[in-house]
Length: 308
Length: 287
Image 1 (spheres, rainbow over the protein chains, first blue to last red):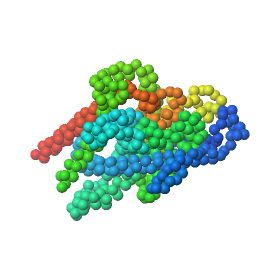
Image 2 (image 1 turned 180 degrees about the vertical axis):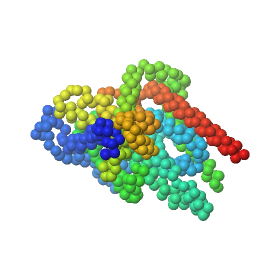
Image 3 (image 1 turned 60 degrees about the horizontal axis):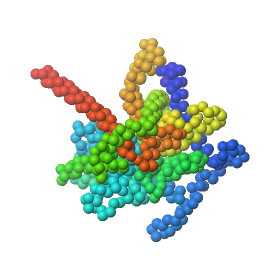
Image 4 (image 1 turned 45 degrees about the vertical axis):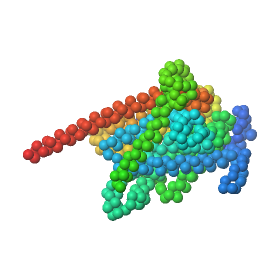
């Protein structure tokens, strides 16, 4: 702080401080605190707000347990609340997306960092970036066209003789959603891993090769451990983006593939019950954060590794 | 064996690019198909009618203009706030820095749904508490701007902070010793050094804002941006006018990418020529 004052004087320091305060207080901390507070209030008609009925309770959170449906898994049949199931499936399929993204991105990241001719690398990166510049909604829409019942994918598979009848991709549970999420977020996995592998000394790989290590052992013992921070950063990004995505599940999903953000959207924009929407949004934030922390603890990654 | 693995890697790269780019090709192709539903099969003949229909679609054009306004506003505010935060973070240390930095970074990971709802609730409740009908406190695109800034500013901050690492603070000392005012130090020494990062930050902020759906969906009130409009169209029956728009956007992207690539190659060639020149000169000296 002293340093700032000396260099830029009290006026400029004050202005910069105010801007940072505006950002962190007015746009981040206070809104989230308001959300938290609101989530404990009941949904009342406007004139009763602040009245005797406006008391704090956990009712909004307990709505998660309303309405159960029957599911069977591994031969067991049990009752489970709809929203809990939705939430669990959101987490589960976000995890699936994250894992598939990793397996897709890792070989390419290695290729970009160690195999490809460095002179053609900028062109390759530029090509990879093109889908990122085209907006997310259009990317999801592109897959909506491809996966349509009478769309190009079914047409191709039918003409290749791989399937007999067209497939309803977007009605097969979460298939369409998972495909769309992978397409949308795989690059967020690719670039962190690429950055991590890039900093690996190629001599280490060559030394291992000279000493007779098979290729999988080189990856398992040298490249993977070195790229762990990149993998962690990519995974956290892909997981949080997937779990928080509203566009892709809405466009590429069906009634058989409810996403938790869609439930929140229904509370907020259809039922106009902002209080319950707040409670659900807070649950999403809290549980995703907990889940990511848990995963990081299991894989022994520290937050400071990711921020590198 | 080594050769085989290398070819396999090349093949994988090509497949990955096909996976990334094929959907964009399909989407562009559907813009020219004379079929009411957006698709490339069955092909019913070439047409440009969707482009003329797109221009007549008032709602879409309005949404497009709205998107640009929001994106410009987000870029301006994010750049100013992000740059100030980077300078501030760079000149403090210890626990305060860790906490502030962590708080700023965490905004990137907060789900957009949460940002949208929390922004909406805060501002409308402030409006209610003050008992005013002033537009700032009603739902609308200005709240979308504020919500988007809350995490896009962090991205700008990271870019500027990276650039600050290569800044020589002694230059500022020298300027102060020579009698420069504080504003002069900021305007003539620090900011010029940061301009590349500021420019990149503005571009990132602009494109992030155009992309944004989650925050906008919860804060927009009745107004449309392009993402929200396309989203509502996909749900309620769609014509290939969206494809026409997508095709144009992809073309703009491609042209920008091409310009960038040509520029980069030219600079690389000049660089190579200079190095060759230097080598020749060195050899001549040795002779």
